[in-house]
Length: 142
Image (cartoon, rainbow, N blue to C red; front, side, top):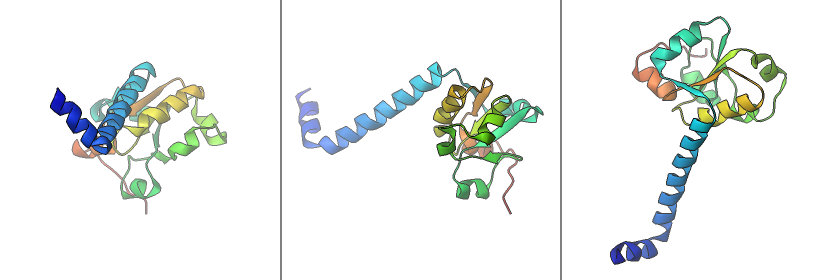
């Protein structure tokens, strides 16, 4: 135990970084569980996406979106999901699947959509990384 305390005092920056990452992971998991947002793995997201009332909201950067996204996805930066605007108001009554590069940032965006009144919100578990790993199709912006 003494060696652990000595290590921590000698490496404050490293220990501080570890604690910050750990707190971020715990906060993300708590928010995910309390937010009431469904997490759908890619295979389970297919029926959701195929529903005519569903909209895929991709919060990736424009560059990532242009590299490849789910067919018919709308690219809306996460910053736009903080305050409702006319386009977001139109989406509230639809089934929304929120997609990000890795599935982490979609949690906060989905929670914001729920706060704005969207009732049916889910996130793509693992994001576009999982989508590509499961070899589902992507399209590119031309």
